[in-house]
Length: 428
Image (cartoon, rainbow, N blue to C red):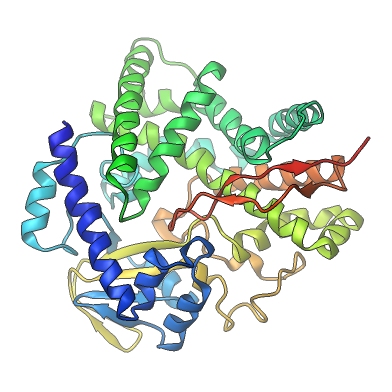
């Protein structure tokens, strides 16, 4: 498998990185977002340069980019645009041929049959099996459990000599909840977090061979675990979401494993990032914390503003499945359109004074951090619930909380996140 993996890495990452580095040196703002020196901050200047070029601009043959909120939303909701996979028409035929023959068959959330990168009717089939478990009414029933887990974590922070608000809080809350929803045991939490940590970079392009190899080794380990777990559920299903995936439809084992892994990763990765980014924003804007302390009913809106201002996902993409006229441009079939969600969320045409962090912003929920259309985030309601309960409880319990030095970013492009966040808590 390693030989196939190396070939796959070579064409998906090494070649892509070389091309992007050359493009960045030539002044391509999108390449600067991906490989430039300011990429960990989202390269805001490059995003604004793309915005100034117009609603949609061409950056390479059959590749376009946009930071326009309305246009991003339209494309996300337009069934004529499909998801991006390693083997689709955005790549030359020769590379697609190589990638098809080096498919590792692992549960990679960025490759089919993960519902993240499949389109109807397959996507509809997968989502229908588990959708009700993440509907607003179902998530509302979890509120008390989220409160209990949050309170326990916050109490534990008190006895931690130098707490890290990523590893000791932001990771622990969502992994505990999604593991319970999926029916996975508590003693697996640390392993599940490790799989998510090594697998998340696969959403980027330009990984080192070492990072790619670590990711696929952990994917293989996760695949073995989920195959065994799913075999047990097939024989004796429970009342958890994975049992629905196993017993609710005629899915192949690979479809079951891939979407089980996706539900796990999507169930905590985005929320970890949202919680971490929210802690940083709120500690840097004490006036907003004061407002929330005086008016705690503002917390749900504060979560929406966190998602808008510093969302957990920076970039997504779509492939045109036919010739399409949009934004006064003709987009050819097979063209890739890159959607800068971070730019759309700060589009001044939609969000006045977009660089101002304001927990009272009336239309903050119009952000695109949870995507839109058929691929809108299945766990959005759960993430919002965990964000409002978790952040409110943390700052109410430790109102003088402050970060102990700059938080350490993960260094990823697509996932906007922190790896570590040491803090000092308020005294009792």
